[in-house]
Image 1 (cartoon, rainbow, N blue to C red):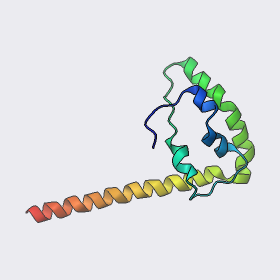
Image 2 (image 1 turned 90 degrees about the vertical axis):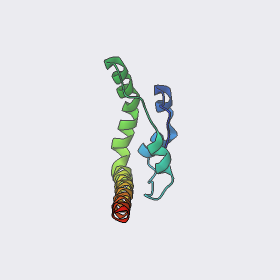
Image 3 (image 1 turned 30 degrees about the vertical axis):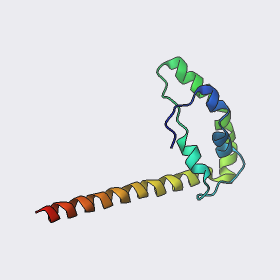
Image 4 (image 1 turned 120 degrees about the horizontal axis):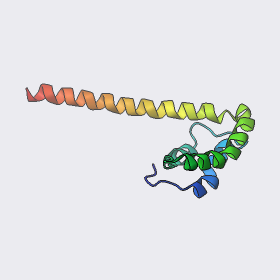
Amino acid sequence: MGAQYSSLNELKSNQYLSQFVSEEIISVNDPFWNQFLSFRLQSPFTTAHSKLIDESCSIFLQQFEANNPKTNNYGTLIEVFIRLATAVRDECDEYDINIIYLKIKIK
């Protein structure tokens, strides 16, 4: 996932955000999600910065409201998130099992 924060200008021209709110249906297995979820925007520090973000996103929100009932991309995003959260939980469970095993083995 991305480590650098994006600027407001990059937000306005972000192809993945544009694709997410478009009329295109995005499959749960599409590699798109990895790129979409790697987009990072620095949190606003001032009210003015927050307002700029809101203004930059308003056109995306309008497109999203119009297209999501047909594409269900938001529902697919939730499915992707659940899949990723489950993978993280499973890794944590595996880590806990390995720690318990090591503790038993050391004793």
